[in-house]
Length: 454
Image (cartoon, rainbow, N blue to C red; front, top):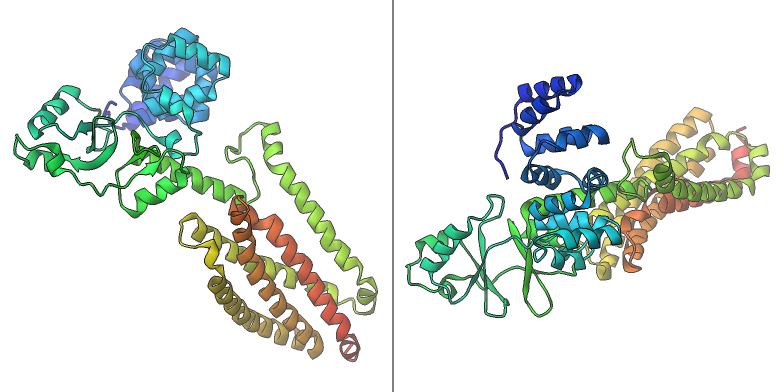
C-alpha cells in the first residue's frame, strides 16, 4: 500500500476540484492523498460522485481505497459496479477485505464475482468462517517457511517474495503438511549462520488460536502477549492464516461499539445518527417497548399503594430518589462485571466471592447515602420517621442493586447471551420496581408514626 503523506492543502484542493466538477484534476489530487484520507473523502461523496471518481483511477488504486473503507461503505460503493470490474478490484484487494466484501454480496453476485476473478485461492478459505470468528478476521497473506529451509534460503525467499510492508515480520515455521511448528523473526534469521536450518532457530512456544474461536478471544490473546500477529490454526494444528495488529484494532473497536450500544439497549451495532429511519426503528424500538412494559409494571406496584399516597402525599416526592439511586448503583455494577467478563478477568464459576464483595460495597454505600438523605429529609420535612423510612429504603435498594447488577450479566453469559444486554432495561426494571416496593412497604409499616408529624 502506498505511503503517501497527509496534506491539508491537498485535501482543500480536492474539495475545490469536486465543487467545480473537475473530475480529472480531482482524481490527480486524490492520488496524492494518504489512503486513509482517500477513504474518508470517498465516504463523504454520493454514489454518483464516487462512480465518477473511480473511472480515471487504476484498479490497484481502487483496491487500496476499498481496503481502507468500512465493510458497509465498501458494499455501498460496490453495488453499482459491473461484476467484471468488481472482480478485478477483488483480485487486487487484501484477501481478508476481499472475503468480507464477497460475504456481504448476495449469493448470486458472490458466485458470479468468484467465477470472474483470476485468483481465488487466497480468498476462498476465508469465506468458510463467520465475520465474528478468528477465521473471519484472518488473512492468508503472511510469511511461512518450511522447517528444513536454511537461513540463506529463507533470506533469498524473502527477497524474491517482496512481502507488503503492512505484514508483521513474523516468520511462521511449518512442516511438509503445513502443521504449525513455531515462529521466528527477521532478527534471528539475519543473525543465524547461512547454513543453519530454520528448525534450529525456531521458537516452538508459539501462541495460536483456533479459526472457530471468537474474535474477542483473539483480541485478548494479542493484547495479553503483546503480539503483532497471531497465527490461526484448525484442530489438526494446520496453519490457516494470520490475524494482524491492524485487524485486531478493528475487532477491539467493534467489540467496544457493541458493548456501548447494548449497554444503551441498541441492538444493531451498525447504527449511526444518519442511518435510515426503518433501520433505526428496528434497532431501538423493541427495547423501548420492553422498557415501556417494565415501566408499567413499576406503575402497577405504585398503584397498589394508592390509599397510602392519599394519606401521606409527601411520599410521592421521594420515591423516585430510591429508584434512581438503585438504578445508578446497579449500572455501576453492570459496567464493572461486563468489563471483567469481556476481558476474561472474571470466571462465572467463581462469582460468589465477587458477589459478597459487591454486597459489602452496596451495604456501605447504602449506609452512607441512606444516612445522609434520611437525616436531611428528616430535618427538612420535620419528620424523622419519614427520613428513617427513606434511609432504610435506600439501604435496601442498594443491596438489591448489588445483587441484580452482579448476577444478571453473569446469568446472561452462562445462558450464552451477551452480558451487556443486562443493562438499562433488565436491571433498571428490577431496581425500580423493587425500590418502589421497598419504600412504599416501609412507609405503610411506619404510617402511624409518620402521620404524627404531619
